[in-house]
Amino acid sequence: MTLRPVLLMMLVAAFLILVIAFSNVANATLAETIARRNEFALRVALGGRTADIIRLVALEVVVLSVAGALGGPGPRALAAARAADPERRHHGRGQRGAH
Image 1 (cartoon, rainbow, N blue to C red):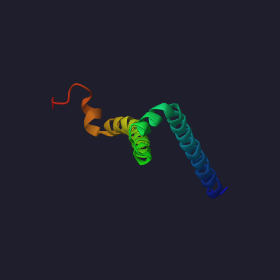
Image 2 (cartoon, rainbow, N blue to C red):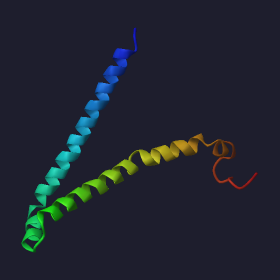
Image 3 (cartoon, rainbow, N blue to C red):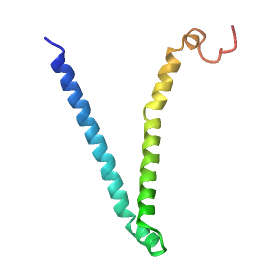
């Protein structure tokens, strides 16, 4: 059995998962934006430009995306790096300074 079809199937599955995740984020952003219609109308009535409102929403999406990217794999990667540290494995917790 060749490995190529299996890898291609895994690539397609990963792509579909990414599409689902992106559509979920887009749907949540759209729902939040619709819920804030009154706020945006008030901002426009007080002299805010449409470009300012778009910039505000885009900035919120970027901040949430970065926070999600750092909060998702970040702690797990840190824990894996700490577990792979040979210094920690031999000395254990709480005995870091004792040699």
